[in-house]
Length: 120
Image 1: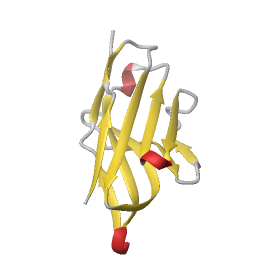
Image 2: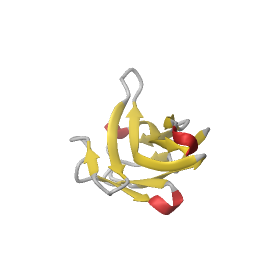
Image 3: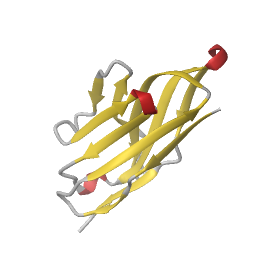
């Protein structure tokens, strides 16, 4: 069993900043990639950013230059720095981790989500 837990969401004014954290724990042998997704009301879940164990990153066009993903491999933790927030960034943000558990089984685990609301 692999658990993924997010923290750091909240209410922020347009132009403000937030930092989200996500920690994976359990019978983890290796994590290949961790990422952040978001889902706004009435919309499909979309990729925000992801990062591999080697540090390669990928961002949605809508957040490039404003959001930064980083990772602490030793702590199985990923962070998302959200700057210059816009009302359209309002969504539930979910963390995802993919990798291998001990004894060779793969995992693709999701957190419960954390709400980010951008409003004046």
